Amino acid sequence: MNTKEFTTAFAESLKISRKDAAKLLQETTRVLRETLAEKKSLSLQRLGNFRIKTLKSRSAYLPALGQKALIPPRDVIQYQPSAGLKNKLKNTPTP
Image 1 (cartoon, rainbow, N blue to C red):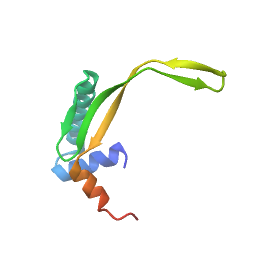
Image 2 (image 1 turned 180 degrees about the vertical axis):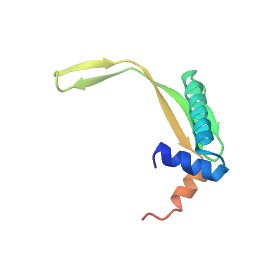
Image 3 (image 1 turned 60 degrees about the vertical axis):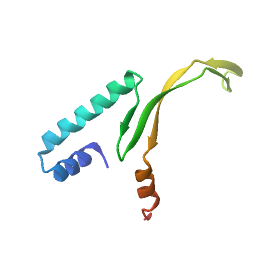
Image 4 (image 1 turned 90 degrees about the horizontal axis):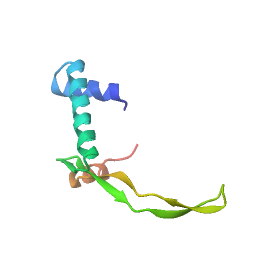
């Protein structure tokens, strides 16, 4: 499902125009991005938890150069689905 299909389904579900649904989706993603940019966690009921995790620096071997390199620490986004979502996906038959 792409963004256009999602927006259409969202609009039909809420019985609002696609334009209004697109605005809601855009604002929701903006708040999500800003919250994570501030390194705060975000918990959405029935969906899951989003948080920022800082990975430590590590050394890695670069085969193209034939030498080791130090990879600096970096932030990554972690997502943990809710128990309800896990169960729903677990019980859904695959086609």
